[in-house]
Length: 413
Picture (cartoon, rainbow, N blue to C red):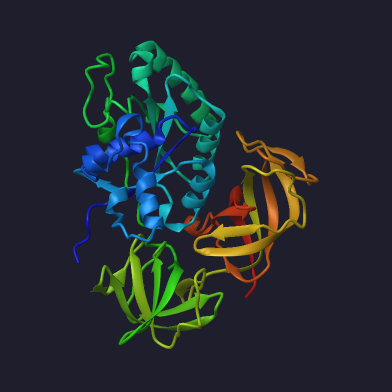
């Protein structure tokens, strides 16, 4: 099977109503990934593209994921549309949509808003290292160069606080609705000398495949297939899986030899990071493993945590978080209720400096170091060692209340 172009996951982030969905819709149209017929009439022409696709998917009609992908000469992209912050966090942290780069959308007429700040901070906490800033709705400010420069100053000050270097970031004046400076340079901004959005996309660096890290494949599903036996489905996050190798599923604790690996219904001898694969392991049955288990090599098995220390950001919580609080942690494909056993210290969200040791509680907006104990066995890794397996979202009452990364693990085994 021929490997295609290098692939980049691209998150569109920013304050609500700043035009993210319209921008995504127009980008997909310009890239030829959707047809004119798929657009609405009038003002919300592009806005509902992702929603329509999602609704169609939710309605049980399978849509080829190509709809959310688009290609340029250089790369294949997957769009991670981040509508509101709840979905944003859940999507960003769990598995497939770990973004490699973000497009921060800031409306020229509104400027930097609370959610703009939140998304920037979150992007950084979750390990996004590349940023493009789209200064949108330029048509509403008469394509004013002065307004554009004013926003560059505002946004530069903001992204500096989380460690982005504004000199390395493209600030592109766009109109998502009119299409200015998306695929080619617009006559409406003769004063702008930089790249159009698509040119900026192709200057991003594709993520290096973490082939040198230990093998980790979070299990998404397990099937019984006639004539093949039990097939486990998952995405290779790190490392390399080869036919004939001995692998172990944790926390299930079962192991066996890889008999076959398939991707897009074709047999493969080797699977690498980013590959969505189905694989059959000799001696492992459908009832031995489940979604949330993680596959690794027998010699370097996935870590099962008895307890772990984490750095978290509380995004939104109606009350306060205290010791004993037990929400659900979403980490790779697992969902496990975990208990806060210790609040170690709070940190200044912008600088990371310690604010208070052993606080009594945490509230919305706090960044903190905490100790966590899973209520049942779960796999998580130190984010420094295997970042892909060390990030999580904390959900409660149907909302994402916090996000974080694992700093240290006390193994259960």
